[in-house]
Image (cartoon, rainbow, N blue to C red; front, side):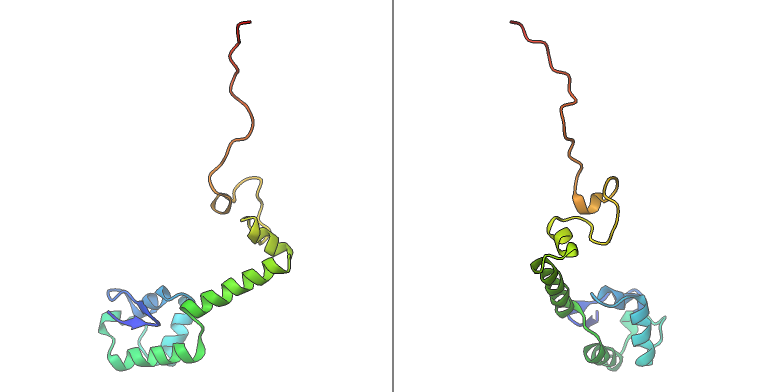
Length: 128
């Protein structure tokens, strides 16, 4: 099992897919990294040599921001938006979608489980 940027990548998958398990590396970036390091795209991660792993790791450290450092940057950007009370920051504070999606319907992932408001149940008649 190879470790790249502190992440153990799956060994039974192709290298181009395995690299996407690192936060900050998507399919396109993974292909670019492998082309730059001259590693075959369809090679399995378990078949990588130590030299190939070190070339990949060196390129990632040199050119890309990944994992913890990237997460700190993203968190800092969101905190800045909240601090300056921008519209996007207010949407983040309220835990609502921040990119213009509708919220009358949908948006359940962001808003959470539906809570019914109002008294729809019939009230029982009381004796006086």
